[in-house]
Picture 1: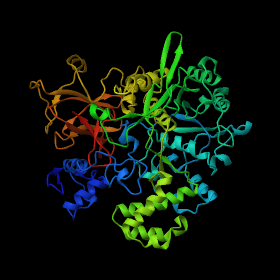
Picture 2 (picture 1 turned 90 degrees about the vertical axis):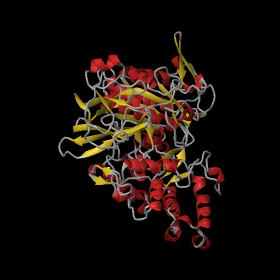
Picture 3 (picture 1 turned 120 degrees about the vertical axis):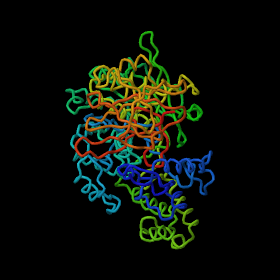
Picture 4 (picture 1 turned 90 degrees about the horizontal axis):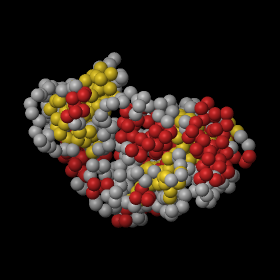
Length: 624
């Protein structure tokens, strides 16, 4: 055992090595009280949790952006947290699934092979350091494999294909929207240090460019993209199981009279789920293909860029509707509410087009801003001086006080909706739909036998009800990515059919069928047959880890000690156990020891949607 450098408590040496990635606010708090401490020293999880709670108590209950001069364009709640939450901080996902082996097709106005669409994260790639030159940036990106399986250009009345097509590498303005939807769904987060990573960072992509040179996308052009997928089963040729449509039709029309909706129905019959943005009218008015019965139509919520937990009704009640379109689709005597599912639709990080002048400008602004945030005013002024040709700020600003520099930067950042040196905040059901498409790619990786109808059913079945919002606009509720994957694993044909979902209370009958002992979640490796108190909770926990030598439970209840509370191997890569927890809130993860090397790693419970800040970049799972 080793000692925590802060409290002196015992910490497993392998675990201590995993505790160096603390969040910036927690790091600053620790450094104030322990000046000699370095992040590389690590700390015990209990200390990190304590500092995270202390920091959380200093957050404002009201957004601070209204108190900033100039007023910033997005809400934030602490001066050291100036930015947007990542997707996995908003809606917990299942970290064991990345969309591998599944191709998502996109219909949009244009695309670009953004660095976040690479096969893997390449830390050596610093695209902003290159001259702002289309050819040089393309050359840098072409040397690194990406996940674009094929590119199809259906604009201007002809068909062009190939990942070397000039329109795929174009700096035209209409390239941005499709780049945004693909990266939000399937980006690996390379340019944001993993913060703005999509749910399907290993999915294949099939971008289909539709529309007119002026940027408009008539309904007939969207139809052309769907018909291309249907023609000669092109969807099957490229392994397409999901289509994302973040564009809409021309005018309201019954779905059975609309060729675009009929094409969606045909794709669904052939085995492809079509995920569609509901639209942003804020009215009871649906345009094709959003009213197609088999489409999974996506509306939006506004979480105000605020942390919240699914098990706290008061925090759930703080979610508000985005101004999405809604309505019903009628099939015989059935009325299908649209949208069926909601996802975050505002305060999302949208990637800047790498070949645009804005990319370089926001990169320089971001570097200077981050220096100021870290208390390095001289560093910020040096950056502004070094990159004067990009920002063209006057000499007076570049030599001014920290506060004057801060104000000058905000005046340049706000018009571009800056949130990160490589991103700006975006909104709309256009960006909500890709979150659902990416989740269904994870589900198909978990269980490739799922049909489009089953995918749709499981997405809505796993959703979080939002009973404080109008029924006709909320569908079944809010997307829950981790829980949707958990249900996919247990659907007929899935590897975990018949097993409970991890993180849920287990009944006596289910416990009897499982035939595994109940263990008390304390700092002990012994099974217990002692009676369980009425206030205690018996919880089923499981982890899919096919490459593991062993899996054990670590948490606040056993001082985070690995290799004490072992899970049993149930076959097919699944490890599980039943544990009795005393009343109260408990934080936990799984300690997974690799089969070959024996080295361990701590992993959150992907099936439990309840997470809490840990003080580290990744949250803890919660039993409470």
